Length: 215
Image (tube, rainbow, N blue to C red):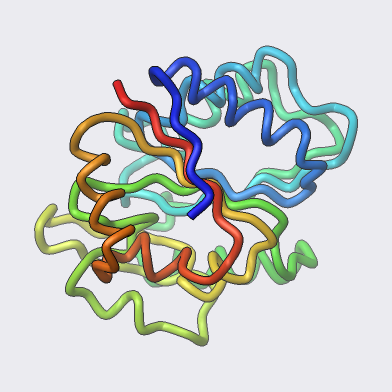
């Protein structure tokens, strides 16, 4: 396991922003949640204008984009605070369609029309239960092999979500897992012990960097 440990979330965020800048990646998948927010703020303060980039949303809660839970909304307020650079593209899930299955299909259509194949870099988060993206323990979402994106109902959260699938995540050139705090330390330990968490399933055997903040 390629593990890098940082003193706190700020150090982790700066390292992740630096890794993205230095990667040369032109297709970058972005995770949601609270952990990457500071990384996106840092990137948004000095946008990547040295190369064309297609930014792709990893997964989304099925809420309007102006809802506080929206991953796309958070990213647009941070990474794209100064607007989307002219040479960049932004591929998100269109929850305004009000149909999770239709949203997943529309995302796949947009993916194909954009000429995307394998991506360069995927940022991943990690839940306290070991989920990543919207691939949850005990659901059939991890078994899907023939789709780019799917709709997922998360019973524990009583919520619909839309997400990229396992094969898309695994086919990327590089994955960076961003995790912070004691609860995530437990998941990290279990992954190292061989527990079949979703985060382990999508990263095992493919190049993955773990960026972990101890507080």
